[in-house]
Image (cartoon, rainbow, N blue to C red; front, side):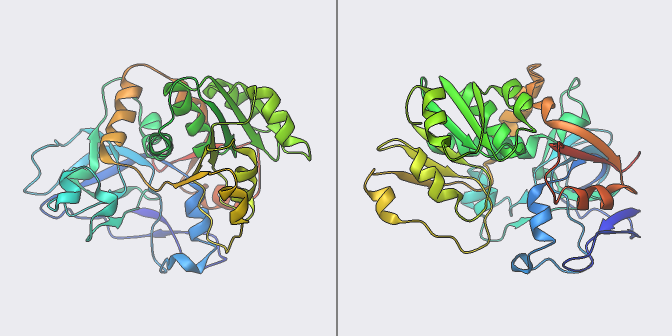
Amino acid sequence: MKAAVFTEIGRPLAIEDMRDPAPGEDEVVVAIGRCGICGSDLHMTEDPVFGIRPGAVLGHEFSGEVVAKGSAVESLRIGDRVSVSPLRGCGRCDTCRAGHPAWCPNGKLGGGGYAQFALAADRQCVRLPEFVTLEDGSLVEPMSVALHGVAMSRLGSGAKVLVVGAGPIGLGTVYWARQFGAHRIAVTDLVNYQEERALVMGASAFITVAPDVIEKVNTALGGAPDFVFECVGRPGVLAQCIEHVRIRGTVVVLGLCTAPDTFIPFRAVSKEVRIQMSAFFDFPEFCRVVDTLESGDMTPHALITGTVSLADMPGAFEALRKRTTQCKVLVDPRG
């Protein structure tokens, strides 16, 4: 099969021939239909802290068709279209049985979506309903990350919400904040590339960052936000979120920041701010996203801004290191 392979930090992915995968007894082989290019993969290929080894095939936002399965797989059939969670737990421990494979002591984060075929355990797969496309199936993972962040916030009806960062996770957070009953939602970003898309996802206002951004946010929301979601992952942004949030408000951190960061604890203490970290998602949340897509809500589809072939994927991947009008770019290995 063909795959886009990591070679070393600072170099583009390389298209190489690899051996087709063969399933273990509890595994399936998925012919990739679509795989989203994720910002965390960009981070992994430029920061050695992640420890990605040469020869690795990244890509963890994928859907496709089951084309082979192991002897113990009973829940799936050849030809089933599935969305695949990258969180692979052992499936046997209390954590896995409770639906939290991200915290399995023997768990791992899978990938393999930047290729024509990938392996997955049967327990990682959720069958896609008839009218959910493979394109939308590739959105289940990032939408689950956003759902988890909103669920962790304990956001309720009537809340005033600020989402900092208008990337796919930020826009997914907008969507779920609206579903959870937020009254008004403001989005801030350095540029206005995603303004229209943010409004489609449920935002009330889009504000380009400027010296008077706090005043503009408070005007748009009718007061300081009850909840602020950090969806950027850059040093200094958490401190900005603490400045934005109201007294006794909540800051939820979804951004993936691997560099050292600082903030003045007194600024958070003086407002009794609750800071909640959010990572990954629970498997029931992954299934909830599939159910939402099955219901006919096409709003998340607005995240998709382009599709590239596997051959063109390394160039598209590198282009996303700089801010563009793109939001979620998908890879079609069959294209």
